[in-house]
Image 1 (cartoon, rainbow over the protein chains, first blue to last red):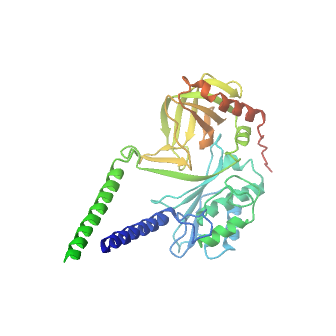
Image 2 (cartoon, rainbow over the protein chains, first blue to last red):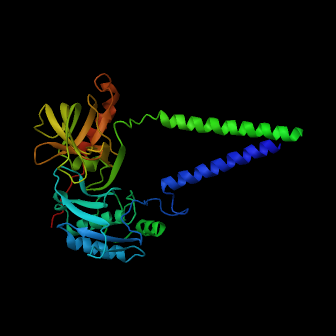
Image 3 (spheres, rainbow over the protein chains, first blue to last red):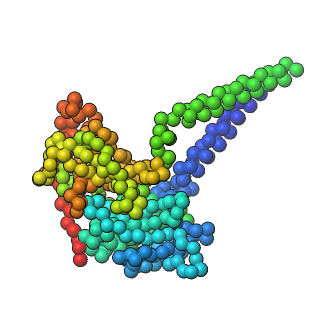
Length: 176
Length: 191
């Protein structure tokens, strides 16, 4: 009887431990009931801030506007890199005709994460849609995944959404 | 005394079960089908698309050509055109054009994504690289250099063994033809 109890407890402990490891690897759901569209491959530093560097970007003003929008949320503070800070995020432009994407976020373990805009496609968008793209990409940098729920900046295709939707708010709150 | 012996036996059995489990887990990892000698890791990148690419009518409305084709050769990979993505060039034999005019019988498709110099597969999220000798329905745009371009999973619909099983895909191809007729035209919103 004692042996049976011993084995059962052992198996239960193994199962609990395995489940915990799996949940940790998947990023979890943010504490139960929260948003699942979050990730930890963000661009934040040890203090949960992001210092970015521009590289002759076409849409510098839109990047600044998007930065201010995300900074209205707490705690992540996004600011331009100075000589006193280390770069956490780079912004680049590229020109690829025939592609279907407007921009992408690349998390690179060996280098800074980067946001790259496909200017060829960005040029076909109006200002509101361009702002949507820039705000969406910075959303990736602060740890949000995109999803298929329209009415949010993190919707996976270009839209005219430039203000946070309810899923954006929930996901940011879950992540931070 | 008897109880102590039983406990010991149970402990042996438990240890044996755990050891067998651990051994099985190790073996299953060891014989994993992932060709680790070919690809170090898969890097999937989050893109924001110009249209809802999962909606075939929208994707077609944003595209120049829809056709059934066979990948005949993986020609080369370019590492200069994109900051992050290797670009893989494929020769493709055009089998049947469903939309678009002036397509030659053999074309080149640029796939934004490929294997980089460190043997990492770099692709957009959810995407895959097409295989030689396989058939696909391609939904693609044309680039300034005259090549066709694809960068997401929805632009190549696999038609496995199409040559010998074409009848299996009649319905699927008919659906694409219907979506071509009902395509949602992309309207640029340039200021």
